[in-house]
Image 1 (cartoon, protein in one colour):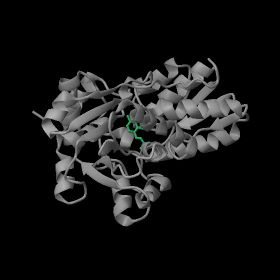
Image 2 (image 1 turned 180 degrees about the vertical axis):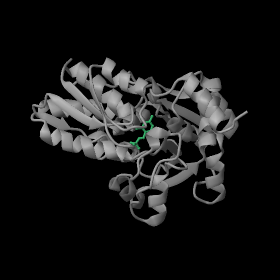
Image 3 (image 1 turned 45 degrees about the vertical axis):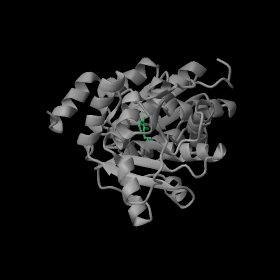
Image 4 (image 1 turned 135 degrees about the vertical axis):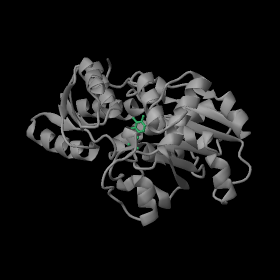
Length: 323
Ligand SMILES: *Cc1c(COP(=O)(O)O)cnc(C)c1O
């Protein structure tokens, strides 16, 4: 594989007929779930691995709850270099196996992502010739994610009135906003969705500074960063961002509705984004005067996620008590 060919694909932008019908404006789905790794993470990790190779690295190391690791493993395999991924306790054995199937070395360390990440940094220092890749807080990651919006710009006929995403540690948020600025869409508001119990961005926005959660209680494991990156908070001063928290139940219901509407299975994190449409978040923000009255179209970043099965979604459905 040549060093410059991107490892991600240009994903389709599809209008959701059921969602457009529900909201009264056009809802477009940017289908990152269709990436070869099942999530947008390949855009960041692919770019970072190519950069690491150019610097002469032959071993890339990251920390991940799931998707960043799967994408790093995929990218490293395509490029013919070694990958090591530090995963926390919350990561399932089947996700660890997905990484191993892509030839990655997997190390389990710490309760949540933040702990695994601290270990990955240490581990990389001790391994000569290795390059640590931060899965969130690196301009190279944001540059990779910014390509989502560059593609959207070529795929739409008119500028969207709002973009919906979800926030884990804030890398996607930083990349999407960077993308909006790079195409001149500096006034397009972003709705940043989280689930309660993984709401480190919302709490930081309210506190006006980074907040470290004592633990993660949400089922949306890949939104479970105890602390978001500083840059995601800083963007709030330069870009209209509306932080919204939904319950796990709403995110899981959104996954179920999306499966029925579009026959696509996505992680609960992605359900949080979809809940922005299914739970009528846009009309609420309009009522509060936070979004303009006349909305003609919205773009939903369907972040996807490979760490979900039908059985897991049905189990979650039971846990949160959906009939
Ligand atoms: C990583 C990930 C997120 C969160 O992204 P951040 O950059 O950590 O904010 C959301 N959804 C999915 C499917 C992910 O893999």
